[in-house]
Length: 369
Ligand SMILES: *Cc1c(COP(=O)(O)O)cnc(C)c1O
Image (cartoon, rainbow, N blue to C red; front, side, top):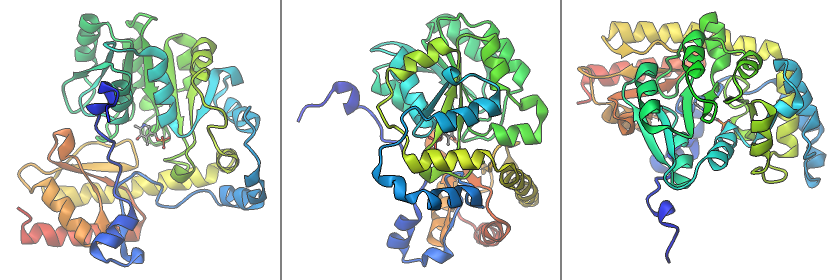
């Protein structure tokens, strides 16, 4: 069968290995598997979200409230924006998809950093767009500006903090960059890990209301999948001036977020204690990952997220280490596919991290080359 040539050349996104696959492949008891591969919240989600979903479970026969008023009101309150400056998607992934379809066409250009969230280029490629990448492990805004001048892209993606490296640009640097970009170019600021960055360093904190008030060409993205622990519910949001939101809305399929997902997200937003606990634990445990790395001469990237990247040059091969960990029931993300001899480890609960340290120490001592 012949398919759209644009589709023929696409790569399928490779998500972190699910626990089910490791159970099947290696016969490991699911209770013994430590999944530190998908940047999920190791503490689960807010008990309030679980209670709200349980209480409303009987509603699953009904189509969702397609106005999403309850969640949009809660988000509008939280961020100090208007409801017409908000769009809710099945994960912020879906908002990235809308943004690409809203702006791109065959041969259009997209600009991003070389090592960043893989979905940008996947959605861009679906639209037949050409992805231009600024080299470097971290976002190099000077290089990006040069490439912007040369290519005149329709969309520029900035991931702050960046996945899969964990580093984060300062807010002022992002703003100074956006200031120089013509308002015909959409600048997507992906804040999937902003809760973590804002907790660690106020200079990294982005206030989406301030950002969109200053810049009519910015689309800010947030998600319930990380700090709120709702990855399985698929809820994310976009914040922008109403002209952008209006265009994105034209691409939204009806009922794109399920009833129970909307309910879970709204309840989560009201439980600040859960998010505070999540953030505190994340950075306490991150310090242990930094110490472990130092003891073993592993270079790390300063992380503003719920994961840490171990660069393994001179230590071992990242694929070999990730594979050996996997056989012992510990799932991490190998970054070889991004051109880095590194692994990305989601910060888990203390006992999960203990397992990682103990097993990794043993593997490194025995030599994984
Ligand atoms: C996880 C993630 C998202 C989106 O996650 P959803 O589950 O689709 O909301 C977006 N951007 C980055 C950088 C992420 O890491």
